Amino acid sequence: MEGGERLFEGACASCHVEHLVPSFSSATTSLALNTNLHSASPDNTLQTILGGVHAEHAPGVGNMPGFSDSFTDAQVVTLTRYLQVRFAPDNPPWRDVEQRVSAIREEHRNASSSHP
Image (cartoon, rainbow, N blue to C red; front, top):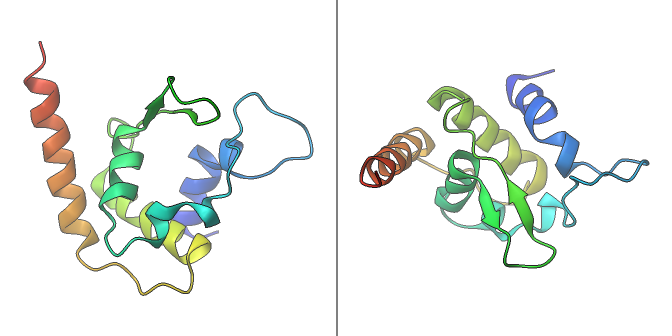
């Protein structure tokens, strides 16, 4: 098992892979249909991985934890590349993912430090 697949299986698959047994935490839409993974830029995917999804107000969307405190930049890059290859294989690979992870993580740090 490659690094991206290992990260996905450990952190994402319990919600993002269909199981025969119903789960209270499963995502209702396949990642293959997620527009973030089909975008020309990795930014929304990176924002989601690092910051999570907090949509209590939107029925059926649910919540997802952010992994900014759990994953290194290298792990986020590896997972992001894996997600695009697995769920959006017809799209060209994103460029500058490493730089975008660093920039977006810095934005998250600045946002959290400006809120007491």
